[in-house]
Length: 419
Image (cartoon, rainbow, N blue to C red; front, side, top):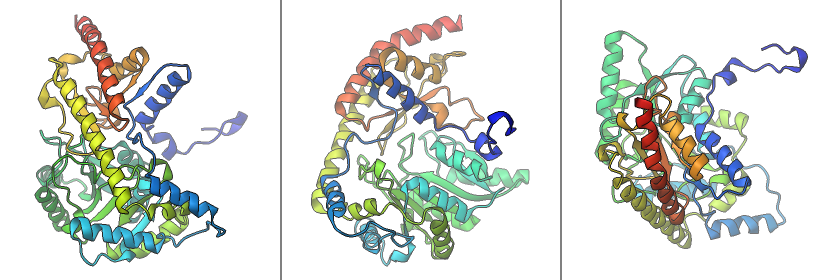
């Protein structure tokens, strides 16, 4: 783009990056709210609760101390990294995890950027699930990487079986082999969770094929009966990404962590020093209180609220006869329900994008259309949508009441469009 007449040059990289659609939905929802409408926020994965009381008080206490809230080591406060290592030993029985392998990051987003730049070069091909977190796709594309969208199975999962098929397909077609895989379990948007055996098989396959596995575990702690497992149990080469935003309810504090292989300590240290220097010191200081008994008790009450909201949404969706139960993802963990409308409930110009827009404008309920999460080369993005139930039980109840009120008119619009 020309810089004449006041125009600013925009890089090809920046121009090629798609917006994070859920934030676009949030922006319009906030506009409607500012106009005086009661908007029900079921679009973003942001807990209704703030940081735990002990954590918030620790931040206040730290700011009232006479010390300077200055830089920390690039990898973060050592006491915090020690507590993270202890967490893996206590919860997952991961022994001898050195604090040297733990990097405190500026949210999981900062962790993604460190991980991607440390592990991959422009032109490398990275596997992602066909239904997955959009920022994987957007950040990797901005860094010049190519993407292999691996179709999820009928259980809404990407397992070793699906990855093995993609590896074989690429070999047969004589195309570039996979350099990496990033995958979340529990998944955003589907909520599907790999079993420990499925995760183990995936780790071993990646090791055998020379594929760097990045295991996104930011929804650990929020699950509903199925056993959680970490990739650290099965592979010393896997990298784990986690965050204080979800289970710990600290989304605005911009704090996360990586657990990295020994061979990446020096490269990631250099990248962190240059890109971020360190994660916010006040957030790190407060997060030291995250594993106290009172804090965990408070956080577990949050999970029970998520469980209740999840039940409401699942039960209300089952009452809609036009929706096939097989088209509703299992929601094993996290705080999302992901729904496929099916071909019969969409028409040209009347897909999930239009449905979510109409629902927001008419009923002031914010859901996120599937085009934020789906392979852009497929047609499922305009058939699927996500409901977040992080906003509380009352929000979930009211949102589903309004959705039920809206649904018959949507079906009618679709039927007329098909005539």
